[in-house]
Length: 419
Ligand SMILES: Cc1cc2nc3c(=O)[nH]c(=O)nc-3n(C[C@H](O)[C@H](O)[C@H](O)COP(=O)(O)OP(=O)(O)OC[C@H]3O[C@@H](n4cnc5c(N)ncnc54)[C@H](O)[C@@H]3O)c2cc1C
Image 1 (cartoon, rainbow, N blue to C red):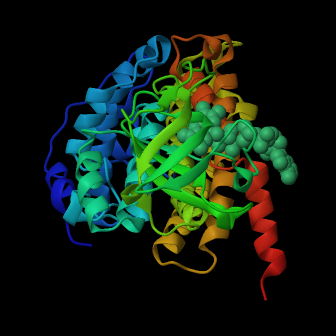
Image 2: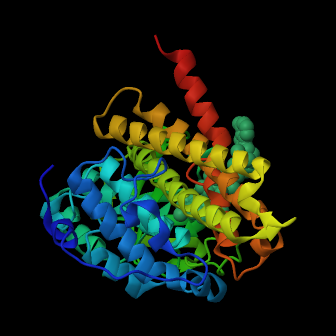
Image 3: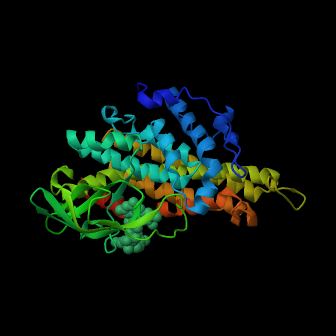
């Protein structure tokens, strides 16, 4: 893989070591040059290891020191994300001719895993933004790509993905937001629920109904902030993902130019699902980063905390638990990377593998983080300790981008209908 644009530059960046009060990423094995069974650099090319290091350094220097504050004060760290975009992380799998880094799905997973060790919530938003930029890059025409992608890749502008509605979550194809063509505009009416970045972002990739019932009646429109008739609900109070706002997005006779239609009328549901295949790998990768950080935090805690006259690391029950966490972390990573490669190569099993990765990895990584919290005892429940934030931030990965029950539906449906 040839070094491209901004990511070729990032490989040359040097970094200092961050010492967060509670999460010292300098102790991650791959940063100390120590071969470890949980080393996320294992199996990567030299170039992938270089931009992985850049992402780890960015996580350690620019994100980890602030992740607790962003969480507690609910700060959307716009300038930090723009610095991430300078490294090529605003359009990682967008084509270079419109400002993207043109990297693969596997490369993308490696980057999101590393960034998440510094802040899951911020990285998860960056992953949604990347998904939207990819949708416009892939399904947009020349004018749309040139109009929207450069600003999205630089994160001069931010994007949101708008599928869910108050009455249609898991059954997304039943969405009701209507778009009726009048002259050279579509008139949108309806509302979207739970939109990540909603209200603070500039570009809304909206699935809406231009035709009859079901998935074939759905189209995809790009709606720009400032369009009359576009408004937002209150900022939701959430368990985690607090460094990014979540709001309803409301359309009341909102006139959107026909030229903002992505692809053809009726293609919107397919575009939405194609975006989500990559989105599911990205979200699973964010869970991996959290689990990787939590294994490190748990190990460090076991090595220093003494009870019954010796360190917890001497207790065989806890040793076995740590071994299980490390094993599940590595198994999860292998599955994510397998799915990312399948998607990149457009393999027929890609949709199922992406769903398997999302299901298995978000469940297992949540369990790893939760076990790490348990190993911290009461301290794990204190906000001074990063482990609780990882637990809170990745809990939602089992719910969004298709719940893990929906992942089971996709996997079994594909298995039962294959010839
Ligand atoms: C913080 C946050 C951010 C989000 N960001 C976005 C965003 O940016 N854009 C966007 O479009 N959406 C977003 N969502 C919405 C998210 O994708 C939905 O919440 C999710 O798809 C589930 O839909 P629902 O909440 O309506 O739950 P429901 O569909 O009502 O499901 C409720 C429960 O029933 C289960 N269930 C439903 N049907 C079945 C079935 N047939 N079999 C078995 N179990 C079933 C579900 O798995 C779930 O456990 C976000 C949600 C959250 C919480």
